[in-house]
Image 1: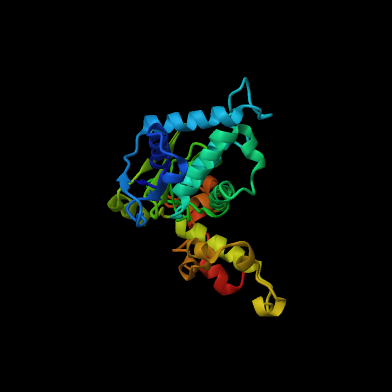
Image 2: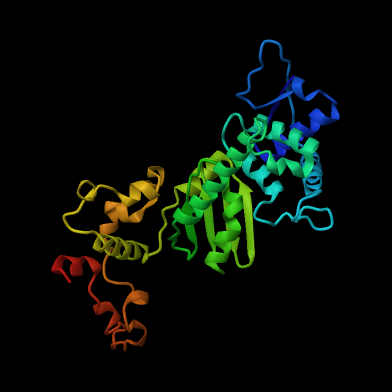
Length: 318
């Protein structure tokens, strides 16, 4: 039997639970991602709806099973927050876009329910290794988001970042950016998976978006007045770090090519030629001493407005 399920954690775990409740032998059931899953010649396909309660029941039972004998367990229960949290690994693996993810998770959970905490030492087993590879790939995408996400300040004072990882891992990194941004209001959008994280004050929430809303958020261009100036400052600083006459061919390697996947280069303002335009004079908040400037009779500042634009400084070689 082929159980066609949704590719998220709820859908996969629900399908695993249905297979257990039906008492079907593990060798006679297979999971596939709907709607691309195709049954073999001797298989019967069955669509399995996602059931949040059943998914939670399967995950809780799995955590109880692997916690028995685990040195990190507390009173026979999985702590859930350790670096090697088994439950987190399952959710990370389910976030992967790979077609084989549902079946790999299904086979791993079968082994885990049978072996308990011993499954942690079976990393080379055929039914365990593919699962660990998926969890590791999703964890790497989380790290890339923490490293490469860039926020832009919008006209309303909030911050926006559009990022498209290879896995649906945005909910895993929302707390990191909430801590990093403090009380600043921001929106982090993943248009590829239709996911967004909104943060305001002490509240952070991950939500699902339809295609139209994801596209609308990803195409938001109402930047703050000083955003162009900040981008130009950063690009000038970045360009100043270059070694004149030593390109990628001259030094034999290119750090950006080695350390940053090219699929993320499109979001780098330092590589965008539009960042050369500072948009005019320096905003008052970035003009040294502008807050102490005395105003003239007509209401204009006598110091802040006199700060030259970044473009003019560059042209003069200053």
